[in-house]
Length: 200
View (cartoon, rainbow, N blue to C red):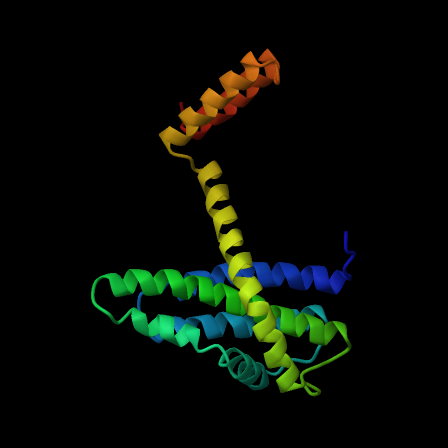
């Protein structure tokens, strides 16, 4: 298991939260507006990562870096324009743009983490290296963003389950008790927990 610095651990959490925000922004059903919203989220991410590494951040420079690096992936704009197609275009564009936005945010975050981890700042930035590193992390970011989004959905489902989910969980508990995997006390406690989620 890798041991990261305190700064890197904090930065990874910042990236994680901004991936979710950028996926939400990317799903906005309005062409171009989604790209602007995602860019704003990514600029805020860079500001927070800079703060975590105690790196001097300038708003204008930060926005320029984000724009220059992320613009190398034209797929984001392509997905945005798909939304302008009547009917299914909006749905397809929203789905792909959300994932691409999350992937882009992940890749950008990794660029800045690696740069800052090696003692870099916003005044000694190698743009060619940054673009290569961004592209190398973009594909990985698609999987990371999709998995993260699915986990968030599952978490929300557990916190606010529908009746079908609760019934399924109760059936699973009954089976676990039958197999002797959980005790009667554990069964009753877990049963009570799930029933409370439906206010029963």
